[in-house]
Length: 228
Image 1 (cartoon, rainbow, N blue to C red):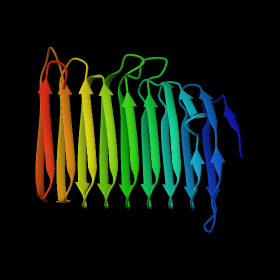
Image 2 (spheres, rainbow, N blue to C red; image 1 turned 90 degrees about the horizontal axis):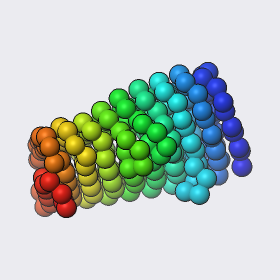
Image 3 (cartoon, helix red, strand yellow; image 1 turned 120 degrees about the horizontal axis):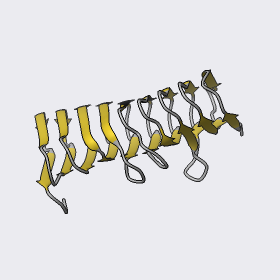
């Protein structure tokens, strides 16, 4: 097990490499402004944080780039506070699990999150703005493969999702809540995909733009004031 605690705004690069076996663990507690963080893990069964001891980041103007290449890797990160920050998470392989809890203790305004999954049976859970206020969240997702599962909840003022999904039997669930101008754009290709879009907005405009070229798929869109 590796434990890493960082109080810095400098460049941090952490690399865990094991092509044959994995079991590399990274734990981070970070506080500071202007952090650039890059983590690359190559192999199998590697972890960044756990459900019980997550990696925790806090600070404005952060740039975070996380890559896991291999199978059965896990990532669990809490963004406690982070205005004007950008995160990129890329999972290449099968059965990888990523969990993001964004805005645990403070505002996360003007944020950008990019997720790319290439492979099968990958799982992403992303929540922004439940514990503290969030504004102007932009999340982009590119998913290619089979039986991937993405569950996104954005409780933000002005939340924008852009999805490109290709492959079969992928399950995409999205909830946008809070006031002011939610938008979701989905480009869907494949068969047997299941897409659920819920947009709750009591004051402004909800937009769902779905372009689908698929067979035997299910698309469910709910736009309402409450209770979607």
